[in-house]
Length: 286
Ligand SMILES: [Zn+2]
Image 1 (tube, rainbow, N blue to C red):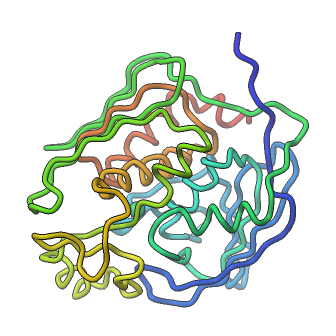
Image 2: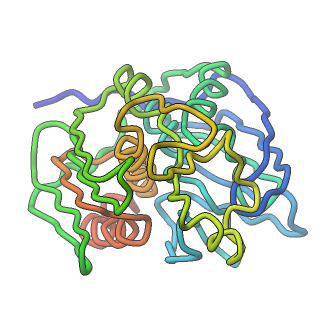
């Protein structure tokens, strides 16, 4: 029988700000330590009413494309996935995140900036054991060309395959059994990307108003425009980052072997709902 590590929160309050990727607004965020068992709670503090959103209680909607949105009591916060991945990486279970706006800042488009802020606040162990979801039967979701399957395993791992109609990306595959160190080294620095041929249409449709060449890899046929890759397969690593963040919408880590083919936030959300339905008693009791 494995002994679970204890729950964790951050050591002190810390603030940061930055431009949001989709809305292009300057957003301030305050992260505060919170008591054991209280979970990950987002709070919109720009609204006239208090609107806490506790990750794991949430009603996840598909929301707008190309980002993960959490919604509760009529309040929503967009683009939470990279921040949630950083919380996952540091094994933070309990935190209050006050956001002065409807979206988190993009920082550099990866989870590295969030990880640095949270590490500066410090990570503190609390007095009760963590809650985890041990996947005990195969779960899978798919749509036309994408799929995610999770099978029972002793550890959490992700195998991810992508296939883009862009010579600079094409087929990429990466597999990792991430722990705190390897997440920080191998996954957290991987940035958001889009294809150059999609970029103008996305902007015209209102996406990525805050996108710059500093926070988004814009991939043309020969590689990223105006920057160099941090890893030769940075895109597939970013997809793993997104999936880790999206799975942490459950409010607790899962244990199982995940295989994803060409997934995106909407299929990730479908898997999160499926896990939520199957393990809802455990999630609600946490
Ligand atoms: Zn992302």
